[in-house]
Image: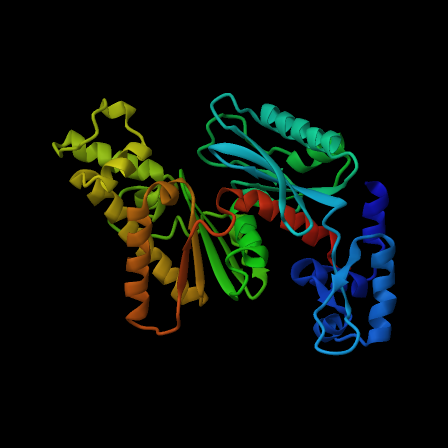
Length: 399
């Protein structure tokens, strides 16, 4: 692996430009590449020579010809080079192996619970990476991209102090250096929602749009935004800035200390608390369980089955979420919204109400079309595959 990493590092910026374009848009002919890069054919040939020598780019066939000799087309080598993406969330950790076109080769996941210490989780991740290396020993694994719940120190590769993890001890975890030391692979870290947006933007349902946002609705509300090919980063690289947008100045106190944040109404925890509070005050429900045993999936089920108490709680949360998203769209000039996560996946009622509320509010002032998508192309694999995209971008970066 070190041999190939050094080969990639030694590539000049022009070769890396070609490599990035072929990876995202291939297969392409040399004529198409001259148009996309602006290089003359002789220049293109010179810079492509090294890429073909180290087998990162390969000839994959010929294009359809309307006359004359068919032209060769080139693509990234999908057969011999793999990358690994890791998604560390509050509910599970997932490790995906993909080729350089982000086609999944294999994914392995495990649940996060009150025994999921940093040491245990990182040890499991390293073991799975080693399993992949052993199983696919005739392939070259180029690196690892990790996405996790923030806040993080991205530059130093440290998970700082994520909220609501099921196990204590997740504080200043030097995860990048630990995994580098054990695997001898390049490793980089970013917020999970940024990576989910990244995978969908380049290879998923958002690839035809300029400005997209990704919302993961679960225990918390995590947001990633890409505007004109750039990730929009918030203060301290937090991914919950949208979640702590105040939408009700007289609302209940949020975990952050402010009143009326979106997360204090729209997260799974808040929905469950609100539902239980209404039942305690006498509201009826179809759910035949002790109150303490009711979880958000029960509430989603009840709402889908015309339980008025559950429906009202879900619809109120969705209306607040939709209003917040509408504000977000107006501020950032977004044209595509992906919603994912346990709440969205378990409640079509929630998703539909969010969309209708956001659309109604937005179109009162603006006419530009806005599109929503439930789950994106990659759904529950979006963060891990975003880790794959991110390590490829890191390896192929210029300079």
